Image 1 (cartoon, helix red, strand yellow):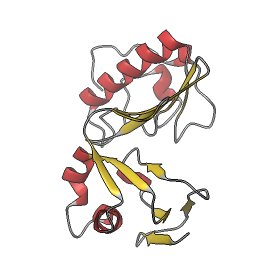
Image 2 (image 1 turned 60 degrees about the vertical axis):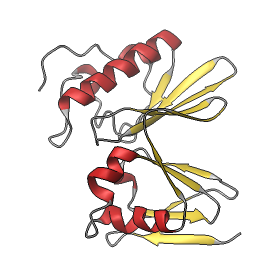
Image 3 (image 1 turned 180 degrees about the vertical axis):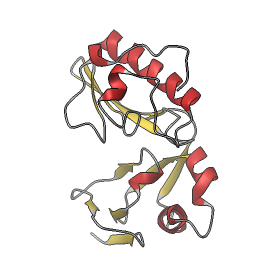
Image 4 (image 1 turned 135 degrees about the horizontal axis):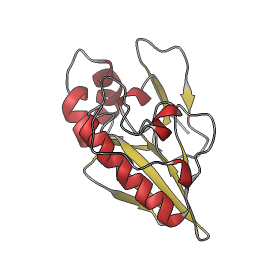
Length: 179
């Protein structure tokens, strides 16, 4: 199987797709430090992320995602997309304009891979706290939606920057304040 290697100019670590992987889900633009992919793998990126950054020819995102697009390996996603039965890519805007999370359902259980929806454990207890670059209104709405779904389904979540698995009861209701 042939591999297409795309290294960002600032690559310090590499993400390698397992053998035989046919899809790679990208939650947001900062997932693109370094991507190794197989020649038949499809990559899914929120269209708003592409529109916001990836078309800027001088950007790191353009270097990585533009190459994937040139090779016909990039699918731009609007809204939610059921990948296969039990795996759904869902819009969760705020971190970036096209940020996505992944909902996995199997044998009556659900888990969410929430990418950068939360950056630190303190945000679980203080859901209005955000990083400075985040759109606070969109992020709050995405966190509210995740909280409702996770608590209704008793689903656990995994975040990119939080070490432990997040139990549904740890997701707090955001207030109407935006901070």
